[in-house]
Length: 318
Image (cartoon, rainbow, N blue to C red):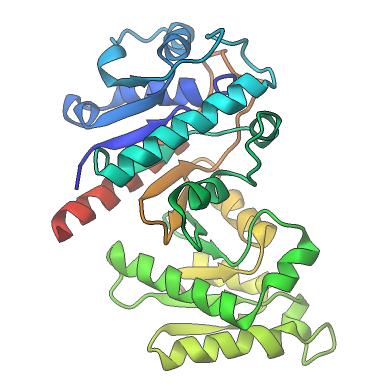
């Protein structure tokens, strides 16, 4: 398995090119040699100029043509949406072939992606489709808080419908397996309730008793150290304070809000249970500051560091 990581540049009109170039420029020579950027060289050169970085990018770029590149910064564009898709598609195929060991994704713009005819809810859905995977889970990882989601980019009404016993159990197991892979011998997992106070014995809904509690019980039978459902207004604080290694959140905002509050610039988005490894920044394209050379690349550095850990684990395990 390759020790090379592949950074996908993201939307050419956003901050992805800048944070990719900045991260590459700050790497050691050894790490830089084990890195490739899947993107458009002309766009990356424009970002390098904006950043006033002195580095020959060509040896590290898998150059993919974009009509009219470099495109105007900060503009919604179907051309950019299509380009972002093609960067990812190429990286996925190379990861499947073993040319690279992990994909690190810079931000894409979902509206631009859909304008280009690529109808996905985001990176995770796209990667699931490209790899033919039945399931993929979004895990947000920071030093003191890690969260995996039962559902993500769906309406709240649909998210509640998806909080089935089968799906919650599968999410618990996926999170447990991933934490074991990155070095936790027996991960301590908490499952958040979907209703206020976990339904208060049916007073505020029965989903927690009827759907979530049986999933937790089934996971415990399989030997997983898991508790729940636990009221969402306390479980994230308890995990952040060290009581749990991972929280299973039932829907997008339930999991995203606490981790963005405590680790906005450092949290890493990890796709779990794909046949390839992928990490990502946990922020958007930031069109308002694109091309100004001021985007914070700390989140990209964190995503790259996590990717290198995954690659090292894969190489070690053979």
